[in-house]
Structure formats: structure tokens, C-alpha cells
Image (cartoon, rainbow, N blue to C red; front, side, top):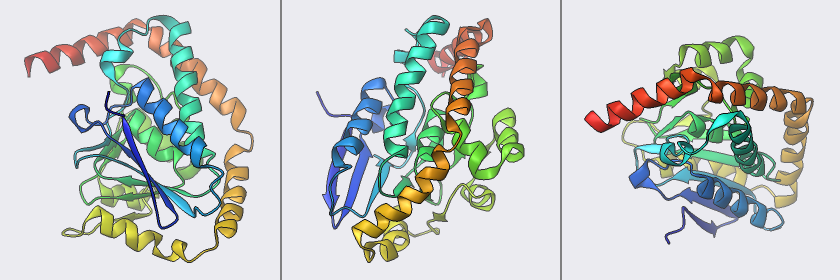
Length: 257
């Protein structure tokens, strides 16, 4: 079986690539577990300075959860179990002891946006959009991304994005503070990422760890209750008939398109 991710280390940088372009890099549980395992395995590598997480192809960074797999998740208890496992996978990215850059090769939607938000910084291709569109399926954020979003841009703007299900262009995402850098038209994402991380390469690994430790302290502060609320409300929303109706509409649209 082909691995859902590819992992390499070059020049002190851990590169993790979601390798499911035919599925728009949908985040199956196996994919999430593989991402977590890659970051956990590299956490103690003392020569690393940072990590870059991206997706294969140029359409999607990650399209969200794998709908075919998620169709088997029935009821509030099963939904909470699934969300807890996925949240732990994203926590491995979030808690990595070095800065993690999300290189958005394409759209980051739903759970894909949550994965992007688990990273410390985001660099986007010129066409890569981001959107918390979970409401289209009658559900909430589930994997810690809603908490990250609220903390990064504040509750008012986070509520705007989630309740309006807005999909932001790179320019709008940058203006709102979600993107740290974007590739100009005609510039490759790889070039934009290299330009962004260039100054970081000159830092000592122990200094990069020290910087990340301070950031992690703030990200973890009083987070437990927000994570609990997010997971609890996700379970309720998943078990609600509105979610089933939304999934049926989406699947019927997919079959007829």
C-alpha cells in the first residue's frame, strides 16, 4: 500500500508531504496518524531547525476529512472518538518542538484548514484559498482548528469566517493574518517557501527550539477547556439530523456532477 505521506529531511528541514492528490489530499485517519507519527519521530532530531508540511499536487493542501471513511461514523459517541483521535494527530504537529510551516500548495478547507492552523506559520501558493466551511455539513470544527483560529485572529473575525463559511483568497487571508507570506503570480510555492525560511536556516537549532517553546507556552495556556467545548459540540452536531441531510445533499451532488 502506498504511504499517505512522504517524509524527507534536507538541510536541517523536515519535509512532510500529504500524498493523496487523487483524493484532494483528504485526511483519512490513516493519513492523520501518519502525519502525527512523522512529527513525533523527528521531535528529538537535534540538527533540525524547522519543518514544512505540504500536500501533493496543486489543487488541495488538504480537502478535509475523508467523506467515504467518515460515512461509517454514526452517533455522538463515535464522532467524539473520531474527533479525539484526529485532534491528537494535529496536536503532534502543534506541539512539535520546532517551528512548523504549512506550505499551502492548494486549498485548505474544513479539516484541511484546521491542519493548516495547527502549524505555526503559513506560506501559500498564489491560488491557495483557506476556509472553515464545516457548517456546510452541519458540523463544527473538531480537531482544534477552531481554537487556533479564535486565538490567532480573535473571536469576532473567527466567528465571521466560521458562521459565514467564507473561503478566503490569498490576499484576504494575508490581510486577516492567516497567511504569513504568499507566492506572487509567476513565483513557485517552493520559491516562496525558500525565501520565507531562508533567514531561519541561519539560526542554531537550540535557538529555534527556544523560540518555539515560548510560542507553545502561549498556545497551551488555558487551552484544555476550549478543546473540550469544541469536541463536545462537534459530537452533538455530528449526531444531529441536519448533518445527515447535508451529507446526503453533498453525496447526491457528487454522484450527479
